[in-house]
Length: 107
Image (tube, rainbow, N blue to C red; front, side, top):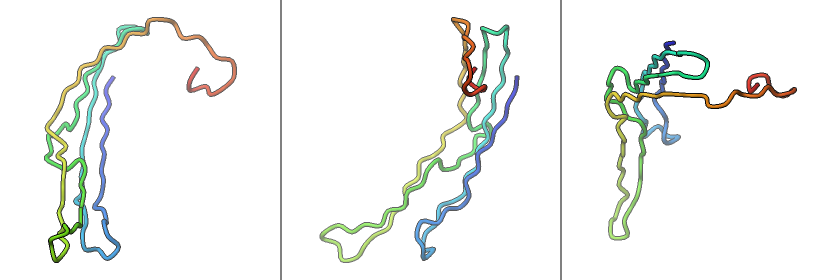
């Protein structure tokens, strides 16, 4: 099995008067795996596949300390980090029972 998923967040508007905006972010994640049978599966997830140096989240703060005459603005950003690998092994211990009625996606 193989899967690739992307997440794109466009430029965001922080204030209605357009005085501050966040930057756009695009990240791609991937997964490869092998199912040995219905009970055992091995997977390797790769986050930030292309090792982009984007921001995961941005904050824009406008504040004023009591002794300051005017407000200051600061932008705080948290990096998405580098490419990360996560190996996974999944093993079903008991056989799932069939449900009567309900949502077929959870049967």
